[in-house]
Figure 1 (cartoon, rainbow, N blue to C red):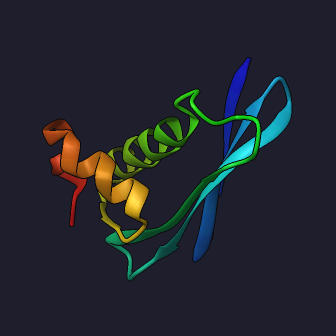
Figure 2 (figure 1 turned 135 degrees about the vertical axis):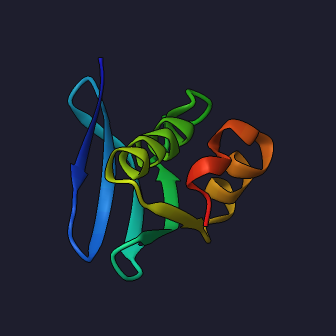
Length: 93
């Protein structure tokens, strides 16, 4: 079972768990009240190739849409997700 938990604050993160074990995280920092910067996405050893990093970015996109804010993807992985998928451009800063 895969579960994503969010810890919000000026510096926040999304953590992804597989069978209740921490498998990775995506960190972000708020830049004002209308956007946040994704600064790092990482999947722990042994969890590569399962699409977990993309699930973390998608959770950030869903959060941005729900909060009606924008995302600035400084993390190279997050930026690649935005570059490859036009349907996420609505939240791109």
